[in-house]
Image 1 (cartoon, rainbow, N blue to C red):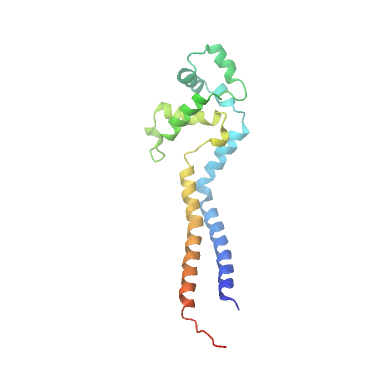
Image 2 (cartoon, rainbow, N blue to C red):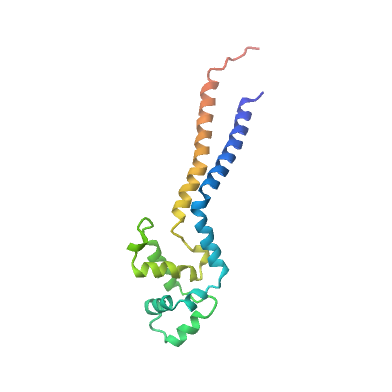
Length: 169
């Protein structure tokens, strides 16, 4: 019987069960992320700007004030209205400066509108959400605990192997 192989297989099964149990336990808290991305993917990119007059006015005043309003209205009716790197960079700067621990009622109007506007930019793959730090923390817990158990178990087996009786041929 190989004790190391058996314990390693037991660890694999235990780690998989732990990760599944932890993920199912915490899924309800972070299902908002899935809903957020599903919502963004289900509607065309121009829909938020084209249907939200307050957001469109804010974007026009903040980023496109040098453009005639009629031209801007035609622009937001297209599929990818926000592709300019300068505008994307400014939106990213506003979003990354938001402290996610601050309550929503303490956010400025610019922060709220930028967060609402951010999914409409062309770089959806780079869309940061305020939930990601929490998701990364949860993933670290879900994967870190089994890795810590593996390291502890391996070191204990190594230490106990020092007590093994060596057999002479």
